[in-house]
Image (cartoon, rainbow, N blue to C red; front, side):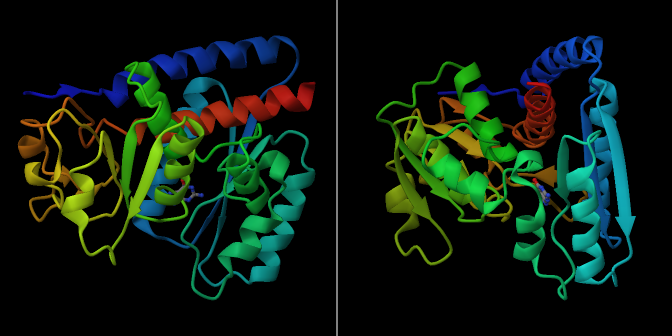
Length: 283
Ligand code: GUN
């Protein structure tokens, strides 16, 4: 078997065009969707992600504001800025780029963001709504993964999804979203003792651990769908996923490449959430 590629980049492009159309409609009604991003410190990876978010916003016609603070900002000052943006009617979505410096309590910061503007879907209220299946902002990478699966018309109903990784940003919520789609979900993580026994049972295998080429063909059931969320930089400078792509190609039915697989969907869903927030604000 040679797996079919799930070309996230192309699917993201298509969705961004649709988002752009929605922005045009909103602007005709006098509303420009606005996204504010707070970046604390100088982490190059965070800066690069934020730059990508700004560029994609501008291309979609979304107003983008970057608010930067030095590494030593106090928690109080940061919370004060979030209060200000919560009140700003021109801003429909607010995210604080993570991780934050050690002296700042990430949970206090996330909880200060108005759930109405929580386009990351990280606020406990958003998470609670997601868990109970209510309408809410869904976290972007997990939502992007579900959209990729739907785009390929892959059936999730009753399928066994195995998620490797239990982060708050990807692992935990993606399992919940698959559950909401009537899949049976197993979570694996660094303490799982019989990883291969479990991954071999997966109809859909989602890998989000951040370890280059951890998953080789022998972890994958013949015909499984493989979703690789990892982005790792090899010594050669090349990017690679958590899955040994060339090896997995031989056994999977579908696979996401790295780069240009899941990655481009994350920002797309962020734009989607921002536009939805602007539509709601209008209503
Ligand atoms: N850091 C890594 N991914 C994300 C994300 O999706 N949102 C935020 N706010 N920070 C991140």
